[in-house]
Length: 65
Image (cartoon, rainbow, N blue to C red; front, side, top):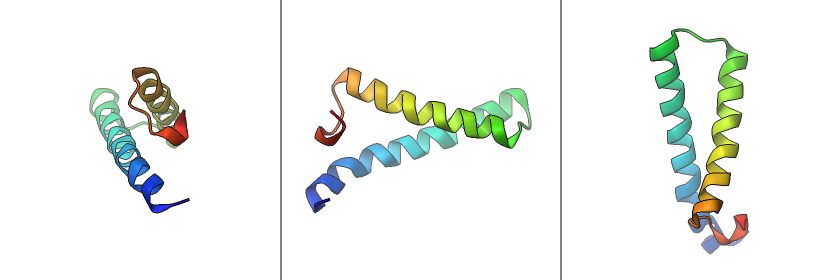
């Protein structure tokens, strides 16, 4: 993996990480304390949904297409 590819991917992984924290925080405010396994399911959903949404919207890095 070269430096240019890492620089292209870094903003997407940072955005994905921030989105995961945001979704987990919102879910805890709305529902209250949730189980670890449900948090893990939410994280997996956000990760896969983010990648699909970014590819579909045309903002994906070249390595994801």
